Structure formats: C-alpha cells, structure tokens
Length: 106
Picture 1: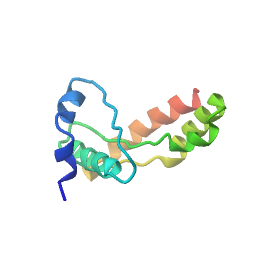
Picture 2: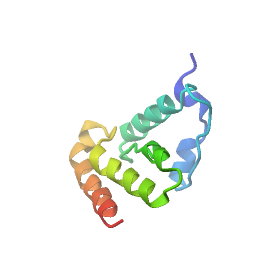
Picture 3: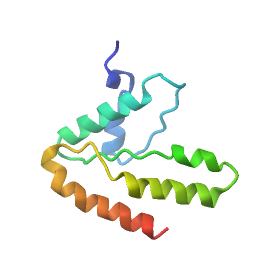
Picture 4: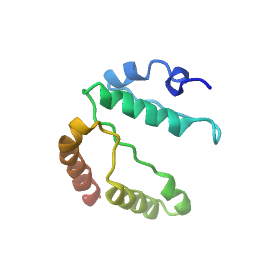
C-alpha cells in the first residue's frame, strides 16, 4: 500500500501559501486516511493545529439549505476534537472556542 501522503503532493505548499484544495475521489479510496495523515504531519511540525470537520450530516437536507447549515454547524459544536499534538492541546481549546463563537453567530 502507498503511504497516504504520497498520493497528495504539494499540499503543504498550498497550505503554507494559504491556498485551498478540493479532495475528490470515489468511496473507499483513502481520502479520510490521507487527511488524517496530513493533519498529524502538520500538527507534528508545530506550526499548525489541525481540525477535521465534516459536512456529511448536511446531506440529509438536500432541499433545505438553512437546515443543512444549522445541522452542520451544530455537529461542529458537538464534535470539538482535533488531531493536534499533545503539546498544542492547551492552545487547541482556545481555537475551539473561536469555532464555537463562529458557529453560535450563525
């Protein structure tokens, strides 16, 4: 099996440039595994705190954009987890408070 990040070259470069990317692939091809590996790698470098959030819960509201948005934001409020290294754990809670304030403002 290929290492998860070998299939995703240049992502750290995009992130360092404050760029964005879309990861699109069929089911069961390793997207989540790759993102978890990237989150751990970024956090281990000490420069980033990686937070992994999903919008999958909004799929049930395909005809109700407001309902989808509220459901997604509520799931983010409830999740409150990350793949930050333990050294960043204290700093992580400050960051999650920012996300909570953002979600409550929506």
